[in-house]
Image (cartoon, rainbow, N blue to C red; front, side, top):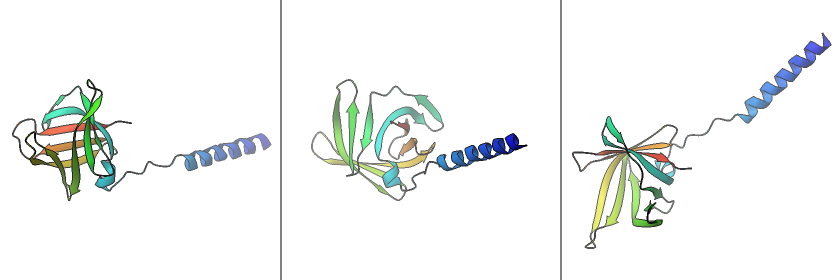
Length: 136
């Protein structure tokens, strides 16, 4: 009987320790914070007909609203610009080769615990949806 009480007590202690140590990962609800970090493209197409993509680099969104692309082959950052979020729209501003500002509008959606990002561009008829995965 005494051994059984010790076993029950030990089991309850283990369950208690596990329940305190297994906190749920908090999902960021503010898109201005959720977008921060490095993202690699994994799919492109007309939703839901998506094709897998082999990434040639990653896109980084920084806390100071800078967006930049890292090219794996060149091993350097290229195409810097600015980004901002208004309502459900991600806006990205870059300079064209002739020095004019170009602003792209994307509808965005985070999924898979904010580890994937779906971007729909408003301007094109084909290949208008891209899916990115967060890099750790």
